[in-house]
Length: 260
Image (cartoon, rainbow, N blue to C red; front, side, top):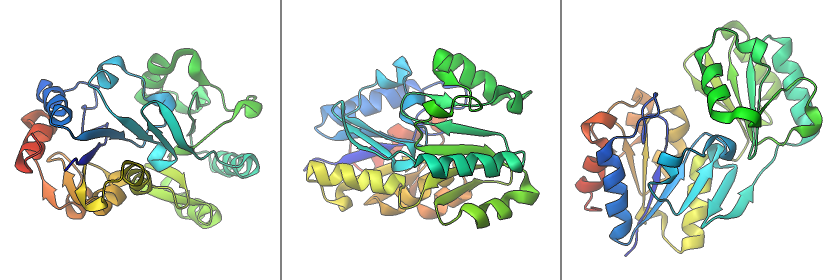
């Protein structure tokens, strides 16, 4: 019986220099050659998933933006866009607390670059997105956004959650960074949408992840596999912990469960 396997990107398929182990590429190709499905399942929105080396591995679809967007065989089956009025309120509140933010969508990322002065992530976005990186200020008519990422001001994070917690789930990555995802949208929801359309039972799904925004997916999959380099929270949520990304973590995890 075919299995569906879902892979986080950052810290799972590639490291934080966007380098992919050769063993990972070969393992996923073998996984699919054996008749199974492979899907990306990322907190990145579709606009931020276009690397040729990554997509060139070969995937059957993409769950992006923490489940707000689902694509199968090149066709969009889910695309939840944040309501414009809510988004305007959200931006106003975050800027009021002087929290640098990124609006993330299917076609563009939006950022006020001066807010990220000195942050190396700004250079990554500029190099990666090119003309598809737009300003937040002055471009509100262009906003088509699935989720947000925010550099926190720790003493104000609880206030932001209190004010916007009825509309978003907050995925906290330590004290200095969090993601804001519309309520009821998670990587697990995206994964379940894919499985339902494929006619695959959830218990026949596998998920690989390493971080906070993978926890829903790791718990919901039939088998959740945390990377050896993952966070304690991801490892606790998983059914199995494989080796580190550069110690053949994907290959070893797939092999352990007889998928390759």
